[in-house]
Length: 91
Image 1 (cartoon, rainbow, N blue to C red):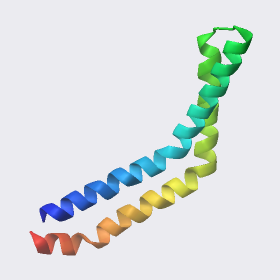
Image 2 (image 1 turned 180 degrees about the horizontal axis):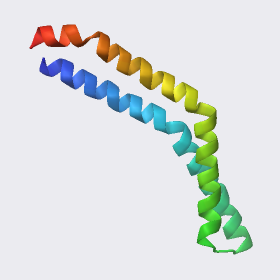
Image 3 (image 1 turned 180 degrees about the vertical axis):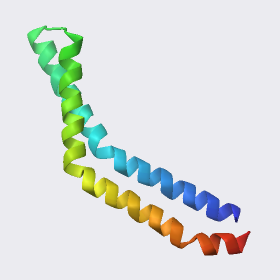
C-alpha cells in the first residue's frame, strides 16, 4: 500500500469518526451546560442530577441520528471494500 493512500484513508476515517460522534457529543454538551446553569441557579449540587439528563440526551441523539450515522459508516466501509483490488495492486 502506498504511504499516501494510507494517510488519506486514515484522514478520511478520522474525519468520519469526528462527524459521526458530533450529534451525541453535542447533545450531551448542551444538556450538561443547561443542567449546570440550572444547578448554579438553584444551588442544588447533586452529581446524579447532572449525569442522568446527559445520558438521556445522548440516547435521544443516537435515536434521531442513528440511521444517518450507520448509513455514513456503511458507505465508507463499502467504499474501502470496493477499493481493495486497487489497494492490493499498489503493493
